[in-house]
Image 1 (tube, rainbow, N blue to C red):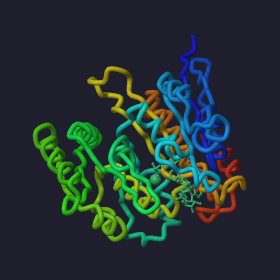
Image 2: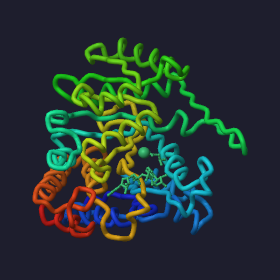
Image 3: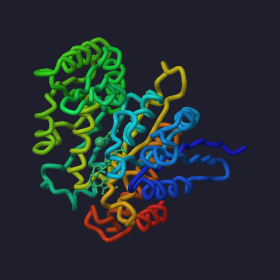
Image 4: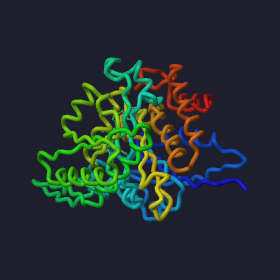
Length: 366
Ligand SMILES: NC(=O)C1=CN([C@@H]2O[C@H](COP(=O)(O)OP(=O)(O)OC[C@H]3O[C@@H](n4cnc5c(N)ncnc54)[C@H](O)[C@@H]3O)[C@@H](O)[C@H]2O)C=CC1
Ligand SMILES: CC(C)CC(=O)C(=O)O
Ligand SMILES: [Mg+2]
């Protein structure tokens, strides 16, 4: 009997459906007589608010928990901007889903050995000698901090609670150390915070220190204030090579900034996980939701010009972290590299190719 993987597909809003269509085509190219993908497509974000009144329904959350992996594109857009109310707005649908799946670590790789960053050689606004050899992965805490804290939203005052518990910091620290240990020699962990001003950052620093010293003494730990980390990323990004561990807010910001190394956000994928495949302490198999670093890019939606590469590379990450298909993950990455090198690129990379054309080229190059 064929092995069947259940994949929940959430295209969302804006360019989401366009880039997701290409990712699904790539995924289907990996079906064989021995392997099938059972796809279930559902609504999330603005389109779900329009259809159901809710940004994500309980049924969709349950479908995510019942799937082997989730492919998510992007949510939000000007149509729903006046409905942005914490967890009930379009972006809140994604936050609710992250919480429901407890996918507390968001891995956002930016490596000059990956196809996305290798294209930077031609397209990056940075000088070659600055970006040569850049190799880091942001491990962003994904289920806590300011995005999930209590909110006060009044006419003339607003507040977001930015809190972390010891346990929340410990688990993402451990996962970042495990990512560091996947490399030989182990990568350093560079932890970002604002311990000079934020109480939550002071707890963050204490817990990271203790967890690393007691459980991962073999991994080098560096603390870096988050604001100067932004400067370093723009001046000497190689010195951040390693695992960049950051809370939800700082991790969101530094990983978008990583897009500047490639000159576009359209090529950076990410994996949101509640554990690595080798983690033996999990009670269930690890949950994985695979989402580009970018958003719904409403100004370019519906024109067949969005770059599908980030979403397609999410399929590779899904193969790697959720489906135990490392060889196939590499085939996707190699095909993306070949296509980008061949010059078939969307306008964000200075090219003239359309979304569909790039997707088709990647399938031909598999
Ligand atoms: N995970 C998610 O669903 C996210 C959703 N958003 C939402 O997306 C909407 C737009 O937010 P922005 O701040 O403009 O961020 P964005 O990431 O959508 O766009 C930033 C810039 O990158 C470009 N871009 C992004 N993805 C691209 C792609 N695949 N190909 C070519 N160019 C691409 C856009 O055209 C824009 O110039 C907002 O409603 C925001 O809340 C933003 C970030 C994450
Ligand atoms: C909930 C998302 C819109 C936040 C974000 O920008 C991201 O996760 O990249
Ligand atoms: Mg973001």
